[in-house]
Amino acid sequence: MNRYLINLSYIGTRFRGIQRKIDKSAGQFQDPHTVQGVIEEALLKLRSVNVPTLKLSSRTDTGVHALHNTVHVDLERPNGKPYDVDRITKQLNRSFERDAQSLRILSTVHVPLTFHARLCAKSRTYLYRLAVLKKEFARDHARQHPHSRFIPIEEHDRCYFLGHPRFDIETFAKVARTFEGVHDFRTFMAVAKGNPRQQEAMHSLRRIDQIVVERGQTMTAAFNREQTEQFYDFWDVRIRGRSFLYRQVRRMVGAWVAAAEGRITDRDVYHMLTVPSQNSWCSNVFVAPAYALYLCRVEYDPVDLAFPSPVPSDDTDGQFSRAAAQPQDGTATHRNDCHVHGW
Image (cartoon, rainbow, N blue to C red; front, side, top):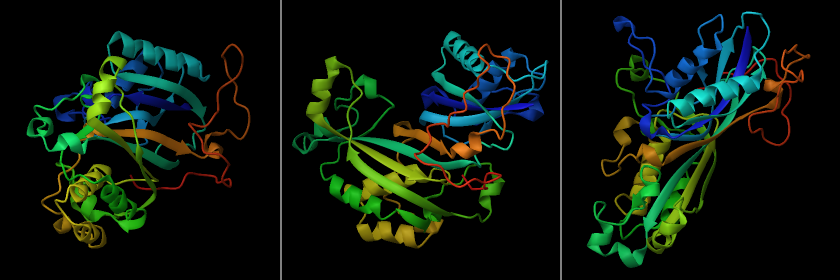
């Protein structure tokens, strides 16, 4: 048996999230509407001895995109030798292209059996994209209304467009920075319907390493770019941490937007953060939409991806890529196994 780390990206609009949803009672074991289901179905074409089952590093909800997400899979080849990683990448991308899936494999890496895509992750970085209507247009009701204002089609389901005339980016950035560090984020944790495990008390302490609010740019083509930039200021919100709770990022961004628009005060945000409870959630806060959220990077320690000794291969040049999936500079001290961390 050999283990492979798969680096992938996708547009989440047409997927019901990344995690496969199956109905065993109905005898349904495949799910063509999730990222996991599509990849597992494509992996069957490799004809491994075992049935491929992905292990996810980071769950993304319906509509959330990924510039870089990771999974791992164990595959046993009939001859016992490892698969050529380039063959896996090409086979999967060929299948996705044929089926018109908004999904792309970036690379495949042969990794030791001690590696785990979720448990070995050092950090995850999310991007949330905002487009704020400029103040000279925000007081025009026609420009402000979400169903009449100009929104470039290229940014449809890719960016959160805001038209409130009082939106203040300085307030947004100020309250966002207070979320850095270790906090109990129970107020910002959603509970998945039908998941009894999440109904129970769970560990909700998380550390956010960095929150950056900086000017972004539109993804529109040249034809629409001038008009788009005339009306909107684009902002990128980058959030990096080791793990996050269910819908934590979207709920945090929703609170920051509410503060920036004056619907709640800085003190309200402070209360939600320092009095961790579902009862602390302000009713004037709306959860930020999924379509403007991107998982940008999942990082690993190169040590966790490396074999202790050379592994035989049957590819033409006898080499396997063992590069880290977008590793950070420097190498942490060696450890024999990956530490267990929450989502």
